[in-house]
Amino acid sequence: MKEKERFSPLFRLIFGAGAVLFGILFVMFVVTSAFTGISMSLQGIKDLFTSLFVISIYVLAALALFGFFMMAISRKKDPAVSGSMVVKDNYLKYEYTDQDGKKKKKTFSLVNISKYLESHGQMRLIDDFYLSKDGHDTKANMRNLMVGTEGGEKKSLAALYNEDPAQYRRIAMFLDRISTHDEIDLEFRLNTYIFRDDMIEEGQKLQAELRNGLKGIEDEEIRSRMIGTIQELQKTEELLEGSGSDDRLRKLYTRYLPMLMEILGTYSSLDRNDQDLKRKEKARNELMETFDLILAAFASLNDEKEKEEFDRLEAASETLEQLLQTGHEEVKNG
Image (cartoon, rainbow, N blue to C red; front, side):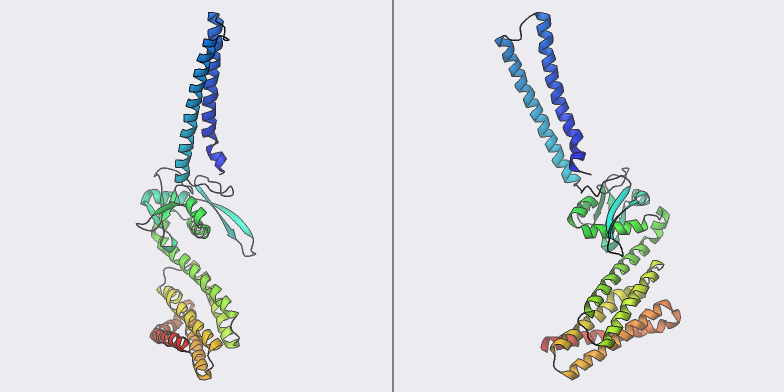
């Protein structure tokens, strides 16, 4: 909602009050002159009229100052948002980019989320944020929905939209995904939805890192493993849609895949800068073994019969950590 739309009623009230004041003043002099027969052109009448006119100006100025004061308080409490993000009770709007790269806008209902907040006070969100509502019985909108960390500073979604549009969009998209679930479902499955969203976000970051890494890799076998890992991450997104808080997924996404990325980075650095062929070949073999472990672990997520493949990855994790430490030292000394 535009700023002039938000505050025009206040200014109409101020100037309306001023117009009424002048009108009353003028009518008072006309009526007095008509009933008393005293001419309004007399100096004493003019002086009196001038004095009342000055008083009226002071009163109008005081009203204007009060209006600006209230505007400042209101702007601090309710930050302005752009015209494309109209504030609407019980609805939230966000902008996103579709698969074709086109920017689109979506509006969704906040009714279920508002009911949850009224019953529970606050709601856990992705990225360790919490959501609450400023005013228990008020209708939810982007100005009174407050986001913050537990025990930390809170800010409205409107303020977050102005300060960090990317984070606002991520939170809004998560709220959109859970907005159709009723209060009972959210009470029992909210942690699952948060886990799923966090893992999807992590997987998309890893895919972007792997795609970016492909640009500097010429080895076709390694490129093939990288592309295979990207494809597995994409397939796992579908698995996550119906997944609970799977501990194997969490470990794979937050521990083992980041380790793979570090080993890949170490190999890339040695491949570019180290002239020792034996050391480069050793780093390559270790990287290929790590890829094989990771890809086998992905397979175990879809097939319980292959569960031992994930156990094999866990058993090798200590070795992987040693590889990382050795690799960092080789890059540093090489």
